[in-house]
Image (cartoon, rainbow, N blue to C red; front, side, top):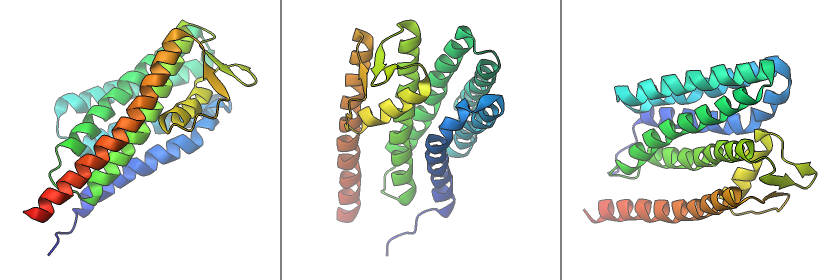
Length: 218
């Protein structure tokens, strides 16, 4: 008889997946004035902290999530209030670190699993989406360091919101062509994300099939 998945673990990973999807749908409100930015950064700055607390008992990872999440919130609100270039830089750097923490947590959660349960699939799916939003922060940092690294159909790309869209288009290999990387660093990281997206899917499917086959044969 097949064992039922741990409902609490399904709830934890399912909640994170729902939060990431919601984050990817509501991010435009970050441009709707100061209040919109505060609402967005409260949600964004808290979702990985809460998930890290529920998915790992590591004090190091929990502290890292708390510090980077607080930094993202503070930088985001400060940028919404001032619009200064230095606060934008703080948003991008803190976002990269914040994503790095949850990627490690979810990566370990997925790779440490020995059986294919619902929570593992949910965690792996969430990790794929988080890789996409993480690259958006990397692209935004590249654009900040080398202005004009990305060019859109309507002119230069001026905000990270456009680069989040571009990141998912790249990760999924859709390649609409409405935003183009034109600097060497932009092209290098764009190519890396496209390759990572394909490899992640192939490796994940291979691992899940292997885990299922091993369990079935035991």
